[in-house]
Length: 233
Image 1 (spheres, rainbow, N blue to C red):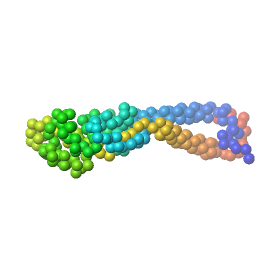
Image 2: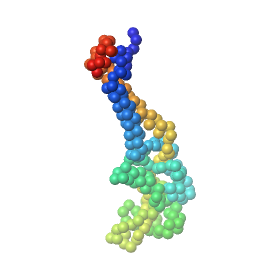
Image 3: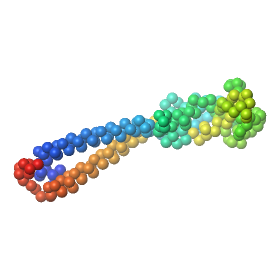
Image 4: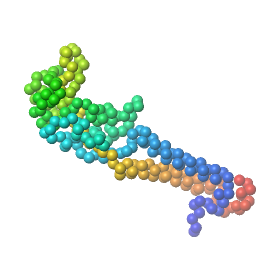
């Protein structure tokens, strides 16, 4: 039995309303496809990233800023979703790994043994423990107990607690468990193809409904006299 999915027996190309619906169908398909991809880009959902390692794996005995541990085309975050999305016009990443890259976070293995060197480098000779300022030896012990990997230069703003001290070295807690991410062309392409697939699938469903249900309701399944019917529609 010959497949007649497109109902060639109805001479649809000769009907103005079918041509009109076809044009609307194509315009909607192109518009939806463009809006979907554009929306993903505007919402920072593209490009997609792949994890290329952990930030801690790049640390050695040399004291370096977090920004020096990451290449220009890389980003740092605990999870991939931290790289995407915006709030009040600002990206979530700016408040996550992106923020860390701009701070004075000094990292190295056995960071507790390098506090004096960091103090000499930064000129900061005050140390913050869990809450208050502490002595150097107590701060080093505090870092060891917490398996710290980074120390940050922290701006202090509480006069009652810290007096006239404006800056102190503090445990760089936010740098823990940070992964390094890089744009993945493969994942990005697959993401776009996935969007296209679901849009195409949706429009195929519309086509099936149109040809197999709507036209069936209007004309039925039997062949009709095209000349006679074209005079009516």
